[in-house]
Length: 81
Image 1 (cartoon, one colour):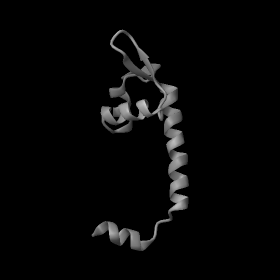
Image 2 (spheres, helix red, strand yellow):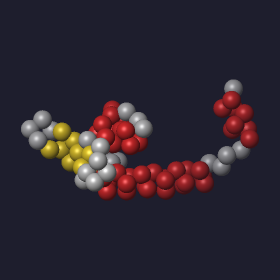
Image 3 (cartoon, one colour):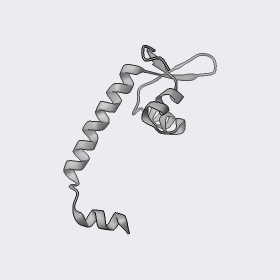
Image 4 (cartoon, helix red, strand yellow):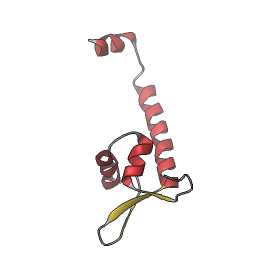
């Protein structure tokens, strides 16, 4: 995938996010990741800028989650079991 490509396939997005195409499709269908549907077969494309904005939103959301759910040693012990 070229770094100057404006639009990415769901497979390209999955590669960037290191997840499955099915997970990316779910993000698109839920409206979490803006995308467009093109062509007669309805292929999905995600604009690179939209993907970067999504990633930034996920950092903000994750920070809010971490702030609301502080890590404590008991959590680590429970996860290890």
